Length: 282
Image (cartoon, rainbow, N blue to C red; front, top):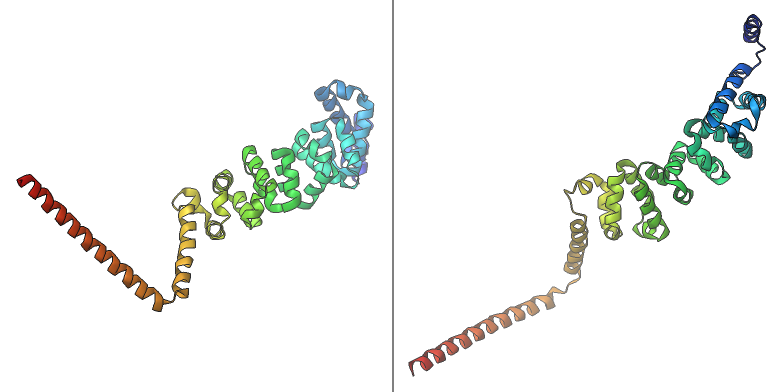
């Protein structure tokens, strides 16, 4: 029925119109004319008829998003989509949504595969951070993508450095740490970068991950938390392991020694004072 209506309209207008998967030859021609105006010489090499035919073919296979992708990226969209092979749908979706910014992602199968595996977060992270995002997402997955898409490019580089030099592995609980960064953005990443040494102490990391907000607000000091978390168990362990039958007499002996030393010093000061007075009288 729809085709009959389209044919009737076409006859009424005196124009041949072919419809495939919602994309008509008229729509394809309009898109081709737009591409010629926008991309100039690059598009002129193909010419209006060839562009129209190629856009129409993509529309038949992939639908309206394919037309949008070509309008945003230009003639090279054809080769990018073709080289994507069975990931053509993913390539079109990225190009239609992000335009030229996504071209470098679409151009490499492994990057396109990361998008297919981890979704829009991975795409946003790669588009925002560039090539440094790729190995992080490959090794860590969704938590890395979530963190990279919200932090600045400077903090993206910091995260890449920490991953490369082993700092992230040394800190541990990487997925949880990156989820905190994904939630709080640059505030959290700045904090992690400044305190990466202290966070490598397990107790400090545990406290931070349990409730990041006070640390980010500055109401709780991470170093103080780390010190207390180490000192208290150490004191308790000393208390448990000490042999008090030996410790108490030793403490008593030290106390007696201090008392004796104090008395001796007092005596020496008294004698010195008397000598000074006698010398003045003489």
